Length: 514
Image (cartoon, rainbow, N blue to C red; front, side, top):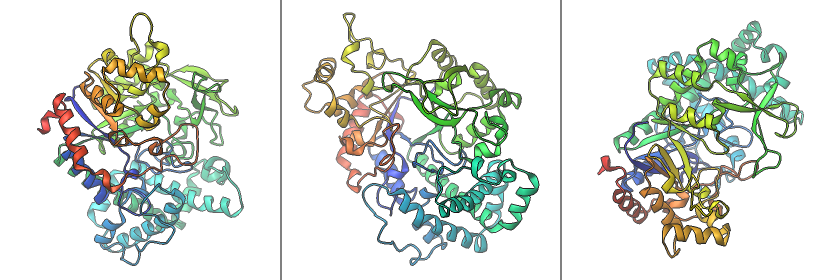
């Protein structure tokens, strides 16, 4: 991938400050872009932007094409005349600071968005809206229908005290299997609600498009994220059942995960339905072409999560309780990316190639010129430092230019949190490797990343401010407090910006902004 030597910040919009309940893509996002510019940065990396469900993970979205309605800024809707000041008065249970309470935010915000959408449709919808729903019909029609049906049957399950009910095991069979007559009848009886779902997406895309344009005006490019797999409870699976390994009723035959390793004796059972790659290939990977095209309309670079799954994926029978009894199945490999490249040209794809990576995965990554990821928290394992010196692939002297270095990712502890828990041998190794006394190892490691040959250096904002484990975004395989962290207004700090800008310039990053 050809790109200028750059650096930037990893921060999901939900973590932005200053708005009720949850970060939005309104004024706080513009302020963050201003801070990035002040700090001399040219990259803003976000997590997947789709609507989230159970567990609140952006990697388990109801749609890979849709935007998360919770990110829509209500003040902007009020300024647009779609909500009144009385509408946006806060109930006592909605906090304006501190971690996100997703349940409360959904309960409060979704009805307001539906009210704004209904007002928009009755007073403001015009040619721009008609053009949007026409251009996006290939996913929007199914998404709006799915969400409308889902809302009805989710409430029915809740009223009956049931849990774990998805479209394939709860909806009437005619709706689950997409019987044309049943779907047509539902559409006719629920026109208003379905149209509101479309209008909410129009409002999201309008706010995001304006924000992206503002970022570009400040010299900031946005790195997005595509999880290789999609959620079982999604419009993607329901509307494209032939592209997934499903039974006749729509339930998964096999699901995704990773095998047992150093970190987990039973592996990780993700539960995503696996692709029917033969069916996808037969259609020229058309669904994936649409998916990548749609994502690149929203961002400038795309990080592909679990890249190794294109070379081979861990397949676990759906009835298994753990990931132990799975097997590696060959993926579409080079054929997939050759087809994508033939249709879309050279792609700004970043490969998440962490974990156990084989020669086949490395070949797939390198043959298409995709930069891989380097995480400094993985670099300083004292057990791997042998007599032949430090040869851990995550150490900066082992990098190639076509790579991206992170102090940590959304799945890691913060750098300070990690250092606070590190073994004394690891701390000594870091100090010895960097040639420092260790009075501020977080800043020392940020400097090491910036001076490396990696084309991109990306830092979670938590690391720029030396925040401890209380700032961790996600702890894999756990539920509870994940994805809830928000920054404080004080973190738009000009002194921190000046320090980061000086270091970035010192190591020849973001020079096009100079």
